[in-house]
Length: 631
Ligand code: ADP
Ligand code: MG
Image 1 (cartoon, rainbow, N blue to C red):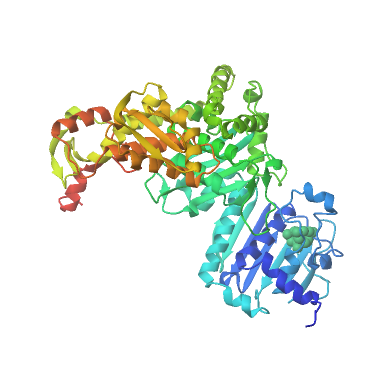
Image 2: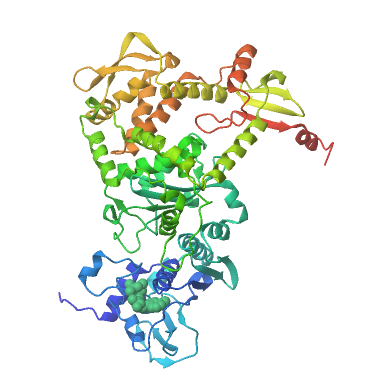
């Protein structure tokens, strides 16, 4: 056998596949270059799903005449001089291989003009460079890529249909609009404008991508927790999507898909959304650079965190506070009333921008808060995850947050500009709306039952269908949670203690959560080996199926290994409790239902712990329409 040295042409064609494999990845590289060049306006045009043509035009710094050939050279970059720079690099691309790789597998042309220089053009066909010549053109750069993979038929075969490729480019573009709201983007496919943003902020970019109605359906958040900043938009409790493609996460400005963060958000929504429904979000997470590893692979959109627990805990706690609308939510909702500082530099990402605004707001800097730093949080958590944690005092991470807030609150009230007034108004309005939706149970007339499940009640000009099982579940769930919160759970001793046999891993997990289980009303202790003895249960769960219940509790171990579980477990316990307590198909008496309605306190917007609605309202006019009495 003979060892051949590959010609650089062949090498580049192979390497190209690592950086660019589809039109959307070409678009990604070219747009990132435009952003790195400091552009404030970027236009992307594609034809034939990007297979026949991709053109990216920007008004950035441009490439000088002498540099033009160098832009095409592999490992040529203006963004990195030596290995030292690797650790401080802040631009998006720095490996200097995108242009070379794309040029090796397409017909590429670059026209560019720096402020001082003249516009020059240089093209390259399948890696063969042409001559630099002067051309007309405005300041900035225009890169055109035609006939992608024309010289690599194998890759060409792997491309999908034009419309699929177009869809992926559009997704990519949507992310750029969202992650760079300070840049004005225009995206055209086959001559039609698909997206256009104006570089005037995130709210505007959201509207550009998702339409004008989106803002009404979202909470805007801006939170700082343990040195981790979380900002952006969260869909409200009634706004769900059938899949995850509506979820956008940007970590330190980069779009990523990350299990820890998405898991935390999903779990925070668990009580509000039905199975197989997913929350909408556009979230920006800003974390200290030293705890995140983004340099995984140029095309892999994931990051690694040094400590998943802190990330998980912070995200979960912020999102669930906002959804539950508790006192802390005010802290996390965006202070949109803050005076806005104009953004001069184009390289500012929205997270940093938010940070800047907060820092410059007089009301906030006048009221310095004791913030727990990432380092401090880590120390506390290290304590929590030690194998013996069950024997040490319960973790106090979130308790501390509460104390912190108690300290911080009056200072806010005393500040000159009440930055949270807007949000408070919003919450009051929501409350008022809920109040209007409230129904007086006494005014409802019972009219019967359908399919042993739905109870029919007549109200004023409308009827209510109540899912009695969902209602029942919700009642028990609320009761349990309230009691947990108030630390006054009543236990019911069991005649025969229940013995639970588990494996070592499950054992460790349960031991660690003993304090929580005890708080919930379980009398639970070690029983030699890896067995556990339960001798009392919460009074609401007297008839609980112990095995099923613990299986449910332990199922939360799989997905979230090594993650702080307190909050998830509380929800899990309560919802598992409900499932065990309510047997499907069972019907209630009229008296029991009245009781139930009273306890619901007329709140018809309630959902069961699994997110199904408890009551559905049917207007008389809707029925009349069905019968064509009115149109
Ligand atoms: P990298 O972005 O990793 O440096 P590329 O192959 O993507 O590598 O680009 C090579 C070089 O070409 C860049 O470092 C930059 O100097 C120049 N360049 C590419 N695109 C643009 C652009 N739109 N505006 C200005 N300079 C550009
Ligand atoms: Mg690049």
